[in-house]
Length: 508
Image (tube, rainbow, N blue to C red; front, side, top):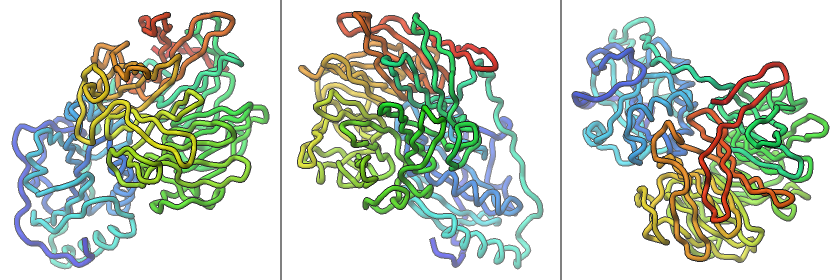
């Protein structure tokens, strides 16, 4: 969108009978917003590119609080994303505080001739359509546009003074000290559980009790404030951490919204940044240590002194040589799609979860609702176990191409099978690697049971004890534990009760 501003024709009105979020129950019209520049953000909450522009839009809202009104137009790609209550939960998880309308039938989308997520549209204070932009953009790009619009319409006397305020929807009380935990990592050798308490900007280190369903938090990595700061655990800052990987006494953290990899020294109680500049990187090139630009690392996996990174933002798996600090793309061309082939030519779609059987890497490819397998060799091959394409999703058990998942986010290997956090189906599924048969093993599909689970980790039984599966039940703000029986099925899950050094609370 050019910095020059020119109104062209009346902006299409919002269709009737749409659900609105963060408006105090009010249905908004463009007529209600006359005298303000209106930015319509067409998005869908699972899309990484849509997530990337949320902080950019927030910067614009803050700078132009008196002149600009932002309205989110949520046109959900996945079925789960078209339910108003799920969108409302997503706005809380992602920190979206402006009004959002549920355009579940794409009527507003079609009226504005939108073709892709994300797309932003500008409407003038006179209700006239100005223009639109598809894809990500920087604050600097749109700052010029908004500044020009404010000057032009202000000179014409069309701008109304003062900000417009919209009340946030009431948030239900959460009986948990966790907030949208994204990933969990079991360390049975030391009796520990690591939890990415994502929306609280911290990682918990907890000692697990003999029953497996109670855990005492021994360390908290991160002050809880959002930011990028190294140092002692209590002073350091993270920004929506997700994936975790352990190598001896070092915990690697995919610090997603800092676009960085952090290393926590569990003995010293300190954390340092080992990769990433702190700024989002759009170039698909490697680099060394903190000079390399990363893009929404969502999960990490350590194997043989390499750290594999699910780089959701570039639709690739990257690899870091821990001995040298070199980081570079390892799997995927960078094009968002679902194509098998040699690592460099295969295409991925927002990889968000990693696991291994020590022979291959398995990953959850969220936007293609697929589970993929790749060789550790740089000359290896990537193949799809379950999944068919970017818009081929659903909830169906079966073998290979017959099965359907919906925006899966986490995977965990155990005894010849991959357990899948099938997030948008609110279920856990099991893929038998010998037959490629995928079946539901936990969850009814109702949010009260599991609600968009994001992470899984297997606690391998010691001394003949049975294995357990730990689940980051993200939108229910809790960690669950389920025992694996000999057939690979899961027993009914039990919430893990966490106690903290200074206080005790249940995650239920």
